[in-house]
Length: 30
Image (cartoon, rainbow, N blue to C red; front, top):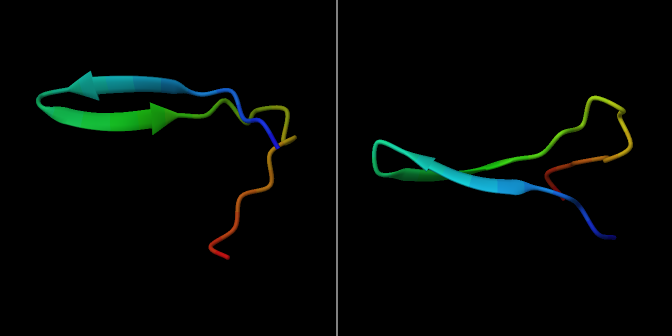
């Protein structure tokens, strides 16, 4: 599966933003 994301940083921290407003990405801990 391909997931579109944006890698960003702020105050020395890197983080990833995933736009899941359409609920088409199912994320789980497994």
